[in-house]
Image (tube, rainbow, N blue to C red; front, side, top):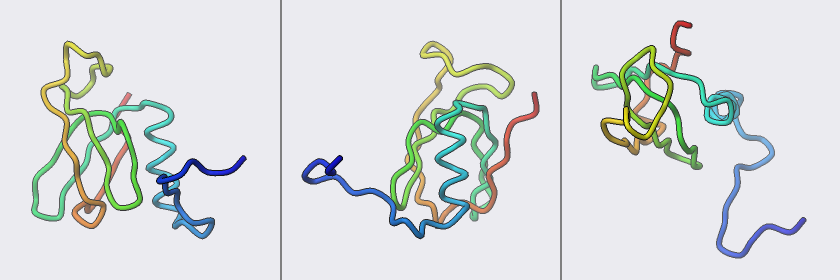
Length: 88
């Protein structure tokens, strides 16, 4: 199908890391994100853009529920050092 006007998608040659982050968002798994400035976020990846991710911050070990979301972060991909699946 043709892409919608005004939308952009990742090129076919998208790096594996980008595709892995998309998979985390699709599977709605909890993650721990370490930022290059030393900060960290625990939550769920809600959306992945070409150069950013949106992360719903919620207490680690809890599923993402509207009532438990503390805030939503928009983080540039270049600002992320590590993304790990949360321990189950």
